Length: 271
View (cartoon, one colour):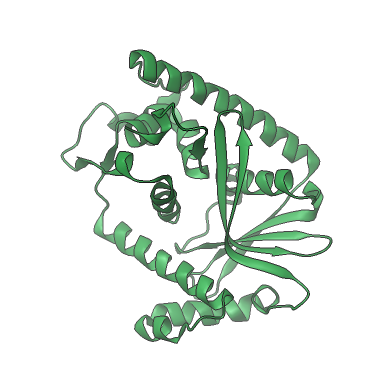
């Protein structure tokens, strides 16, 4: 049984991946997380995801002062990307003894029956400001407006403001796109107004999800499309077809930690 349907669990754990999909296409959310139907990845997607995982491991080991030479020697592109990023962003990669920082930093926030979970690739905390860094390992930066509305951006900023003493105006989030020859970055500032808007949108989304989950548990009522879904949803035309490339995944039998790891990998695929 999917963990999302397990009423014995005290809280339902959600990541930005869950929020993005349930907002974009509720039936697709049902298919992936409740019915446990997952498409087999294309070879090029799988290769990109694996490289992204290696890059994140590299940056984590570097932050922990663990040996990274074996990783660099085994992957020339990793070496090139790290060198380019170090040159492009020396201010964030050079450690300061007076600044707290942590790679793969996890934070949680309880909202009703849900436990919102975020994992920051790198969190740098200073006296008067906090910076969230996220490594993106696909080549082309997304449109900034799309990134701003993505639940990764919104949730990561929101959770940090809710779980620390930093005011929203003291928090920023920067995406670094490390695959181009010259790494590029996009930074988002935060504000009390944005925080309140995220809180309202989050409450509405979680309220809808709670009702859909309960209807699915009690009566097996399917999640429904949003209004005009066919005009904006990339999955709409495919949901009525069980493609031969679909397989029943093991997501429903895996732990929440494994599920969050798989979601984090998926998020590195540019769409």
